[in-house]
Amino acid sequence: MANILKKLPKIKIVPKFYRVLPETAGIYVFFKGGTPIYIGKAINLKRRVSSYFDLDLEGKTAKMVSEADELSYIQVGSELEALLLEAKLVRVNMPKYNIALKDDKHPLYIQITKEVYPRVITVRKIDLSTIKAIANYGPFPSSTNVRSVLKMIRRIFPYSDHKIGKRPCLYSHIGLCNPCPNMIEMTSDKSQIINWKRKYMGNIRNIKSILDGKIRRVQSGLVKEMRKASDIQDYEQASQIRDQIERIEYITRPQMPTDYYIQNPNLYEDVKKHELDGLSKILRDVKFKIPDSLKRIECYDIAHLAGTNATASMVTFINGEADKTFYRHFRIRQAKGNSDVDSLKEVIKRRISHLEDSWGKPDLIIVDGGVPQVNAFNSILNQNKVGIPVVGIAKNPDRLIVGDSKIKLEGNVLHLVSRMRDEAHRFARRYHHKLVSNELIGKHL
Image 1 (cartoon, rainbow, N blue to C red):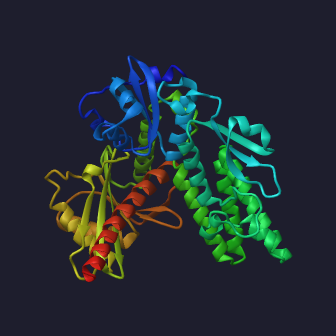
Image 2: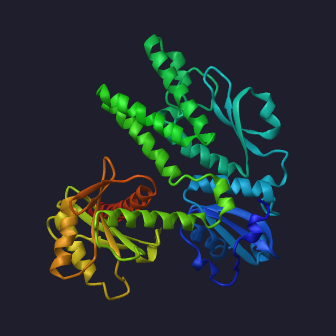
Image 3: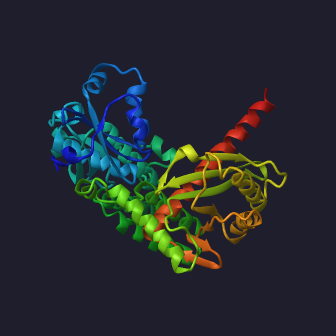
């Protein structure tokens, strides 16, 4: 593992070199004379690395950047993977400027305590043996990484980090310590105590499984719980469990063991190719006419509030990766802003006027919606004799709308298509919220 960094392709640090970096999660490595001097993680590699050269740095960070002559990176599929891969590579390589783990006497660990109400806490190495624990995890390269991991997990499975007190803790008011052990101890309702204890211990078991890397087991268990709640018509509980499942999918999609990235630093690109090949195969299996290569895919979504401030988004993925230089916003002009079909017709009319300029032409269009939304795009494309294939993405369950076929999505293809849909939704909502905010501010001026 120590030699893997030396084998990575290296980029000379020259003015604006970071422009070639991808806008994905991953780890980056600064080198001096072929020796790694700093390893970091990023949610967006291009943005993070460029910040070292766009800001006025001070102290050891400035010295590190001035010494570095090359940079390498490894793309990964999620922020959680970046955190875990960074931790592993820092521990093995001990780069000069990764000060947090330079001195291994006091690294930080995550600990699940052995108590009536187990707590999830952070401890230093020298304190590990002073507290009885169910499990310990670490060491982590920095306290920031530990907080990032716990912050993500706590939003899915609330837990306590405090000892028993006489009133509900602060975090219980914002749903991050739920049920709060203090609240359980305060109640006199025995059935409520049993239910709350069962829920709290269930959260702890799921947290332990996630930190153990058994994420798929947690997901399958939650799916069973959701179905059981739905069968007895406890739809509120089923909805809460569904939200937990979606949050786990969000922070771990696609989830790969960190060792895979160490064995194959090009794994991210290989996964993207596999996703695109899978999508192409699905479309060809139902005799859907597509280009030989699905290099460029555009995805569209509509956002509005009761028809007001309607907007649309166009996000572009090239070789399975978002390319934000080709993202576009549309402000819906026609009066029927509450009609997604009419809005989409307006959008595609405006889009095809740019097929021959710098916007370029996609190999495939994906629209968020079902048959009516797909037909809206096709009607305008056919009228203008533009041959771009269009498919839809529908929810619950996620399925691809291809002509008259509805294809359930799973695995890598689901990861690819849902990633595009989620990005189109995020981009449309962002512009919509901006218009709403501008309108509200204007009314109060």
